[in-house]
Amino acid sequence: MSRAFVNEDNAAAQADQPVERQVSDQPNYVTPAGLVQLQRKVAELQQLHSEQSAKGEQADKQRLADLERDLRYFKQRLQSAQVVAAASSTEKVQIGSRVTFADENDSQQTVQLVGEDQADAAAGLINWGSPLGRALLGAQLGDEVLWLRPAGDQLIEITRIEPA
Image (cartoon, helix red, strand yellow):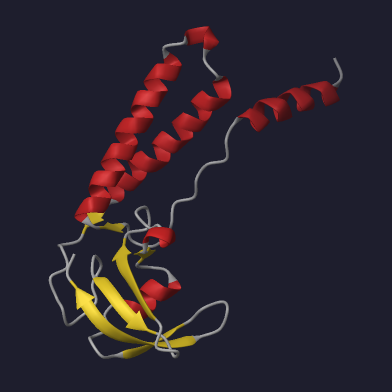
């Protein structure tokens, strides 16, 4: 057998392996709700993995590999989770705070600062390490902060801080 065929076989085997999910360098701060979300995700993935493994030879090998990759990632995220105390201040933005801010056009927006795995911009859940999260974190009621956005920097004013 030619060496080229051996390499092709190895390449095909490697192509079936999913790319590992990258773990962020930032600390894995999570809200209490974020911790529960991570625990549920791990339980869900373990259940799906068990179901797929129980199929034996009938199991979808690619699906099984994807589930194993995701399980490794979320187990690591769960192990590294650092639960932050529930935000209690109405004067200073903390992880877990619900923050209302006004932009230069007096347009108001409300977001909640959460951990990376809990973030969902469409639901108003913003990663504390994102550009908006970093601009808001530690700000006080009435402060104007600079939101460093790819679309251009924007000055925003903190108009309300609610504990989670």
